[in-house]
Image (cartoon, rainbow, N blue to C red; front, side, top):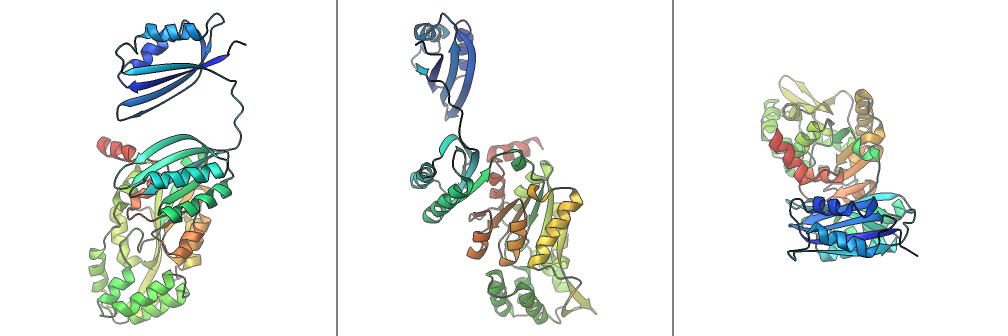
Length: 395
């Protein structure tokens, strides 16, 4: 039986015009190009072309066409022509697996691909998203059950100190148009309330309560009330001083700049204090914000809060309110946070990302990042470092 299709595998040194020369030569012997794919790494290409030959053409005619193209004459490129069987209808839905780590070595990749195979999955494509300041790859996987693969790769992530995200492929991934972030220890380095406490010399006392609350050991609202009470008498001028001292998490400006260029709405929902973070949020162009407000009388803190407390439930409610305000379904939202009071918000969002978070938060989130760069969030959205830098060059 005469094969109905042939696969041409081109391998070697890439150069401009190579593919064009080959396709020109193939015109006379091919009735159809049924599939094509190429990858180039460090100037070396692998180009695969599946063709349906003309009625009077076969292996000899295809090899002759390759010879006529001239692409193999200098010996830097080889072309292998082999018959292929009829393509079977692919089974299973595609999933996107994103890998992030300071270094992704052979051991990490071995663990990932073993887990994929054990779940009955097949890798169709690998794309490098970044090689600095962290490494990141995106894999397109066909076949396995979403939850099964997520569980298997979750164990690999623990064993190999690797951040792994498993997402269903589809238009919804490109349509997440609202991103909501926690402030303390996510957008910002450290905790604002600890910085305020330092002005009164009680930083250690307040920090201990903060840690217990963020780890889920204490009720957040009770812990917040207790810590704010300790700030009684602090001059309001110190709020302005701390506001000037705030440090952004590495990569925060890059993340926000890129998202805003893509048309994302950006929001901050914080259990911290609006008076302290508002100036910085305005500078960053944050569209929406919700945070607690400290009560001030005669220029000093009273040790109480004004208005409704933004606690764990309040954060989730704020995300819902913001999504409705900008006309974005919850499925098209992203939430990023690190503490136990972020869990409800992460659960409500279409994609919940635990950023350098406590174990209780990592377990509740869709995925987690442990690298110290906030712009790694972009890789989970399929945005590469090259695309980020290209946008900066154009701006």
